[in-house]
Image 1 (cartoon, rainbow, N blue to C red):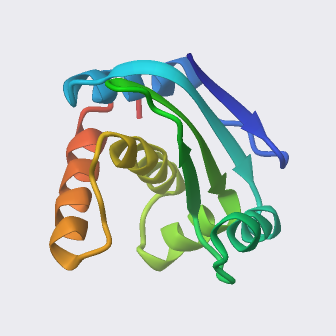
Image 2 (spheres, one colour):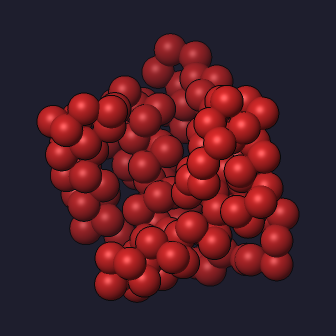
Length: 138
């Protein structure tokens, strides 16, 4: 089950469509949907988590905790709405597109995709773009 929570006043639009899209991507990667929680927050909230849990004193747009079991995806994905807004402006993208990119980025990590090396990052971006092209509700 996919759930959306917010630590800010942000509310995701098209919730049921976004959930179905995430499930489609999970299944297309050969995995099954488990319990996945998305928590939308601000920079301060996510920065505190980044310092406390990852010992990184930087701002970030996403932190994910993977609790997957075998082929069943489980996890918590924290997304800073502040970072998503700023990234959308920086990359001249629509906010909703950048939000969906970050939403699916966490799922792709759970499916085994990495982004630490340049070649891994290229593949991750390609998978994000492929997933974004499969949305039928934007």
